[in-house]
Length: 428
Image 1 (cartoon, helix red, strand yellow):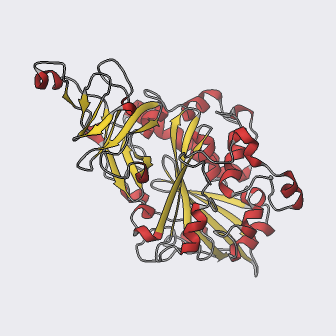
Image 2 (tube, rainbow, N blue to C red; image 1 turned 90 degrees about the horizontal axis):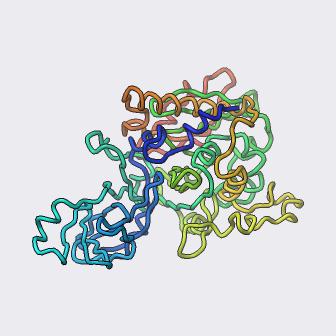
């Protein structure tokens, strides 16, 4: 179980909270690049870490992320006119550039002098891969840009999606480092999902329901090793890296693309789940990419024009009890992504961890909570920079390997969990 005060510390991410300040030390995904496809396109509402913002792309293609509300009377700039190098409030014509600086107040005679003293809160917005990233912390301590491998491979080798998840970021993230549930919840998907099936590792997952967990510290977070029995006195290891605060990679299966997630708090009761697939050394096939678009693997099929899944809590995730009885899906919910989301959201907006009963298979979750708490408190009380800020910490991979029983998973896989451009993932 977890004390209520620690649960509060880990789950609250608004301005002024310990965990909110921790998130503000990192570059985090703000939106998909596809949401601002061209210059002077309509602005987009963006809520991150409980702050209401608006994003836009100006006439020169520069990205801006600013306070949603006009400094004059508080009207939402989502209604603004994106034109001629800035976003103009339609109420009284006040205009802002991508830095949040007011550049025009038509009603004032001494326009330029007045504008100099009006500036909205703003954050940098930078395109890396398929994602627009932002840094919401102190500009004086802004770190280098992120260097996760999936953001830097050629475009034909990667695909990224996002979905709205109706629960706190922490319970979504904890599902990402919980390898023991795969044998149960995703058992149907291991046999039928086009982005999972056919790998030898699936047999080990399905045949051993009692994995042993070993967790090792890394410079940026943790490596969570899940060990299952294999043939000939060997072990099958699935190694999940976690880079603080909320990046995880799912151990690969055969030559299928590698995938993973980045969970970003919208507010305390909602988060964005960014899901990516990439292959380090080859382009995604048309079949693979279409499967991702269709919501297979770690992706979801969303309501057109939104990032809300078609299967959601309002329709009970389209649960099919007959498919559950037939064994096609373990929970009756279709799709790897929504199988996870349905159960994580079923816990409530913020789960009461003081009531839970953890077991050895939860060791990765326990150590992650400890590391998050320690980092948040050290930042708050001593100003210590947390793990995962340094881009060197981003250069990690997941791995799935078969090893002799006497070998340590991390000692044997040090090269396998390093992202080395031009080399394939180690996978079974």
